[in-house]
Image (cartoon, rainbow, N blue to C red; front, side, top):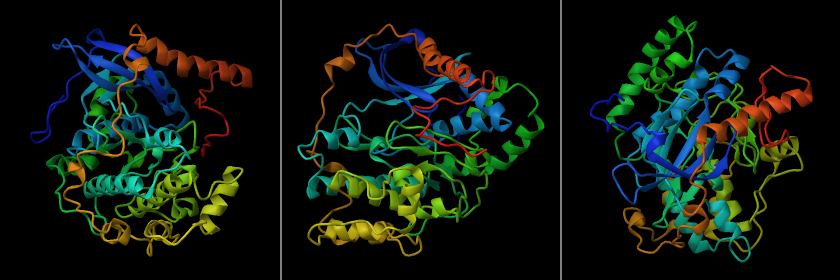
Amino acid sequence: MNDVRGQEQIPELDFGKLEVVTALGRGAKGVVFLARNAAGDDDGEWLALKVISRELIERKAKIVNSDGAEYRRVCFEREVLRLFRHPLLPRLRGVLNTQKVVGYAIDYCNGRDLNTLRKKQTEKMFSDDVIRFYAAELVMALEYVHSLGIVYRDLKPENVMVQHSGHIMLVDFDLSTRLSQKSPKSSPSPSPSPAVEVLAESKFAMKEKINKKKNKKRFFHFHRFCNSGVSPEESEHQATAAEKPRSLPESSDSESSEKSNSFVGTEDYVAPEIVAGKGHDFAVDWWSLGVVLYEMLYGTTPFRGSNRKETFYRILTKTPDLCGEATALRDLIRKLLEKDPKKRIELEEIKGHDFFKGTDWDLVLEMPRPPTLPEMAEEDINGNNLIDVESFVQDVFCREMEKKNQINGDEGKGLIPNYTDSDTFYVF
């Protein structure tokens, strides 16, 4: 893999040197496995390996006639991960390319996610002090991501993992996008990696090259797409699925230098400006932070209705119920859940809010004992290490797709499989 201005070279992964222990979960595009890289090390290192079927990408690309945009969407997440140099964000530990699958590996977080951790609490809720710890780290993670010109767009507890150290790790950037020509208000002081400049400079040149070669086979050019650094702003009709809560597809390929008009996110956490289709920017991540804090405090999201239509109506019109005594936390949540993005609290106001009074932002990452110090579960490390990853992914997606199409009488149309029909909807 080519370096970008001295960027760290990412190794190619080899199934022959990986022990794939168990499947950790699945989404609309891929399966995440727990794996150990035994190359040159008796103990090996634990990795979370995300694997995506090439056939699934190809079928979906044919549906939306995307001319390679589906490949760029998958590769964009890998390119974003290559930029990160932050303790609360994943490091790209390796990339995977075979004739049947593509994927990448990051460090494994054995504390699972915040949603799982919350449900382990006695009352399914966190105390204010625990919320303050995780909220501070989420603010710092989003601050760094925004400094790179990236809007995350899918903040939810399932995407906030807990590392072995007890600190969080924000994962799953396949719905993020670049707003490269506008910096967020109150952007943080760390300068973006030099690779960001290269990615921005190469975007239009690569788009022109892709258009010239759009009639060639996409598989042949997959590796080139993955090294292009092209933003997914030309991606069409992006869809994701999640077990709970429900996820939304991207219904527009219009991304401007200042705002995105894409309809994308996860239903319970999506901001009003996305629902209204008025264009959105970095402020959507602060809205989602408000929803996450509300869920950590009350054990439920503030706007969820009996169906998607009702949820969206509530997001647009309903005032969140902040029952209980007036506290700094409830005030912060109220200001984050301001429906007008121009009035919504942003970075510096958040960091200076009374809820974080006394917080030394320079020392947050040095807290010696976070709320939870997880241990590696026996069922993880002693799982089935004979998994054939390619066959596993093929079974989960492609054969499921064929079976579903046969049942619906749509064989050959290449419908995309989800957890359930109600979880995800598509705009074609």
